[in-house]
Length: 121
Length: 121
DNA sequence: CTCGTACATGCCTTGCAGGTTATATAACTG
DNA sequence: CAGTTATATAACCTGCAAGGCATGTACGAG
Image (cartoon, rainbow over all chains, first blue to last red; front, side, top):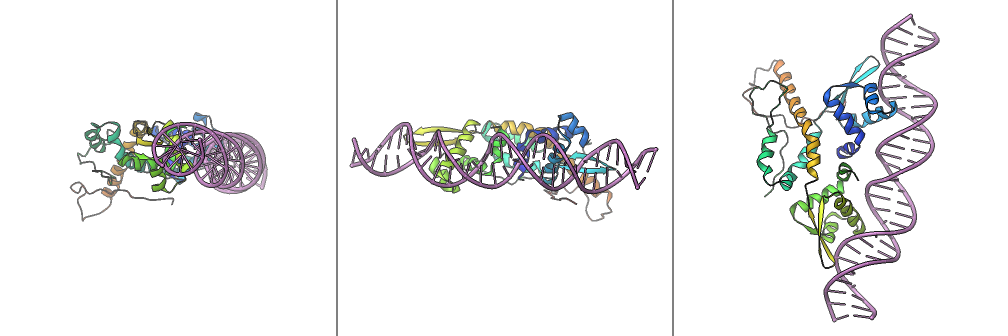
């Protein structure tokens, strides 16, 4: 399934939103979103195959965690459009690219631009 | 149709990519993308109802132009995820840090690992 | 070994998106 | 006026994704 289509499902986006807080068991996800158990597993399968979640087995339980890298592709597609909805955003866009990470202690490295491949006259 | 689902269609993204260069007539879009005429109109309808394109009538012709504002919603959804794939790079750097690698000095070498794509184990 | 728990998978059904063909609408052309 | 161009819409068909139910699998407890 194409990465964009994976995110077209509202339920799957809600799952990702949940996992943004912390990794969770399948049962927890299903309970919080009011999903059936097979339904939860199916959505998680799609997310897994898209590389958007990773699973860590713990006995019979499976702990799912967010894996956000594939979202960079979405971000990259979006990039050449940003200047359209606000012309002054050009500067902000570059600012976002070097967005500081408040979680980890900053080594004061220049944050690398992970995927920059678009240009436009 | 939900905004995410509108963009889930590859053809519609290609239409937007075309309109990013300049506004175009329906016929031009269909010709460049190899679409049937009704197919083109239908996709343009979906994009129009999502507010992603605007149309300017010119006699019997319709000139469609990009309207990128709704993409801001996508961008907003993406925002809280950005720091995750940045953080992942930090983690990777820590991993590399633990490895005995006498060759390079990781701190002074800003060359990033752009997109390392690893899949199911 | 048997049972209960946690999750995955298979099968079936249904709704809907996307494509095609045919037709409608509108404007220009002569 | 009739004919042509440019686009929209209607009607129909088809494939596939999402949901529900039943079952399979794996692990731990007793």
